[in-house]
Length: 144
Length: 144
Image (cartoon, rainbow over all chains, first blue to last red; front, side, top):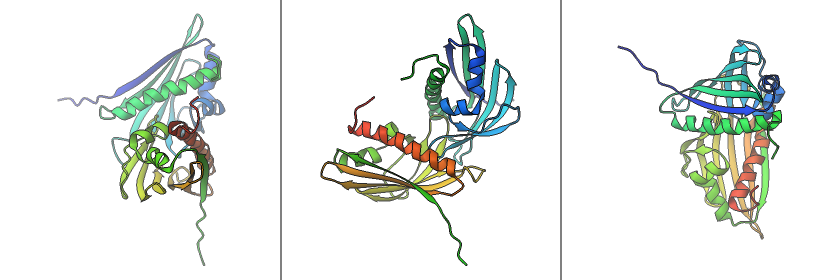
């Protein structure tokens, strides 16, 4: 007998007309992360724990899991809640691939359980907004 | 000997050129709250527990504390975290006062401890954004 643990993954991809080194910077420097994602005390070290803070008092507990400079970065992205429907244990992975015109950026967030449909849908919408700000910051699209 | 518990309060006020009944609706109807504040399962009953959900997996645990129709509404706005610096126990109160031209809306969020400077500053910025969306929704300012 096997126990299947099914989780769903949010995947969002962007073609960014900037070199991978520039995209890497906005993914890994705390003051830049705060401009497109959330306020944070991120530090680029495997095992480093940090927090992402929403403007309304919400907090995510995170930990750097792996680093491959200018290629990939992954960190735990967790949120405690007494109600299992809202407790989240997920991993976010950024993968950068150089292209002829810039960089292909893939963002994956794994770990949504089947019953967490709202969190899954919300994360999908959230990443689109975060990446729109990232693109603006990195100079890939005009500011609005 | 007395123990003083000092907490700070965020206060944001707006003059809205709409009647109090219209402002009350956007504060108390779940589908409207989701348009200017966050996704939620709000219900207008004292003692009702509900959640406010950020798009990125963060959740606030809330409970309706008092209701005075078209005049005031208050609810607990809490966030658990193992780190006391990030754990938040606050109360949000909306007070509506009819004026000659519409409604004066005051939003107060109490409960920030002195060391929670970042959460306090973030909440102040957050309420400005939330109320800008509320004003747009209620027809008090043009959509951008």
